[in-house]
Image (cartoon, rainbow, N blue to C red):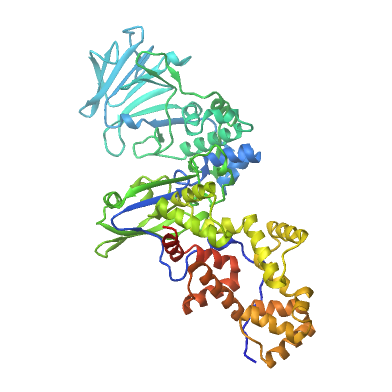
Length: 619
């Protein structure tokens, strides 16, 4: 008897989604996708920002779609931390636009280093502070435009107002477009590291947050059902982030996205009335969480956050977690795409002319294998440089480090969609399907994801069930049988490949083969192995049939290396129009035995070889 090495199926056949996550989407002989020399590179990705800690859209999604409260949201994104109170300490904010330049401010009831200034106009008194040796020159005027009169010098300067009862009493910094109002005081001092003039806004933490929360998360979120919980989560995260920091300037935080956005209390363009920069809902969220921060033991946690995680956080200080809330309908930043000429990429990365650029390592979390960890750039002379995904994000100005790189055109994407519809569904795509999937491929959906989506469709399942009935039982499916199989496969109790397997072990198929043990075994060999069974084969399997039943015998043959090799080879013919090469066949046979036929379908139909042939078939 010719021996058959077989491996029994253990557990449930892995899903197409898991197969993709395991990196089984590239045919063995196919090179990794990359942008090629002389053209453009399309970066298509997920998320907006660094992805560490809380996703702001994720917080909104968990609040309005899952009913979570702010503590649950924070527990999810900031694993290992606890919620504690720290009161209302003083906050110092470096005003970045003022670093290295003079300060011009105006206010009613203005004081300088505790001394009250006389009012010079109905809008108050203006002060200009400029460097003078090791000190600062202090000048006053009736308006931001001067003319200026010196009143003295001081090594540090603190400007405040005698009252903070309303916005009219706040200090206003004179800017090119108008006046920006600040609560608290303004201090001018030398930068602790560089020595240049710097301006800090000094105020209570709770007042500071009023200028942060509505600009980090839209105030309108608080008007959505349970949306206030997202704003409360933002308030706690912003409070923790600010209080955990120190800057080289000597301030605790700053007012730009380098730290977190802080716009002050109000802004008045030249002429119109001032516009309040507070938010009614944000103020309520700040008050409801007053003094609360996230703590690592006795240390305030550096609770970073970003707009959209894309569906998975990046990990780091806090454990990486899935972000189901990120799919909330209000999120327009979950997926993105941008195309850059390779010459521009080379200039921004500081390389020579680029031959190819490809992601070579990912973190394994989420679609396309997750965030890019390493990107290999090959130059036309053969030299190579490796960049981190985050370096690529920052140097190219990408939205996140979760991206794929390709040079796929719309026409090529349409060719792939047409070919996959024909090979999997036996028809051309409808206009909506063609347009939608072609756009998805261009914008970053992988070819393998499209294969997975089509093979999970009811249409594909129905076609495969019908094919199993016809090929194994020689008849079409009865309506109830077809409906039952569809329901089972939808519910995850089987795959389309299980239908054929189950039919081979049925009494109906046994009778079709002639109702004899020898005929049954011979038919199984010719259909599964494409060869006849020897007398020794028949005798051996007859013993298995008698002792263990038809299901055990069928499974043993079906999951043998020889039968798996036949089925894997068929996919070469179906998708690539050729026979398998020995190395590729051996590899895909092992994939089939370990992960199921779905992994092979996705791998081969998701390969670059398939793409290249699809473009030729449907130019």
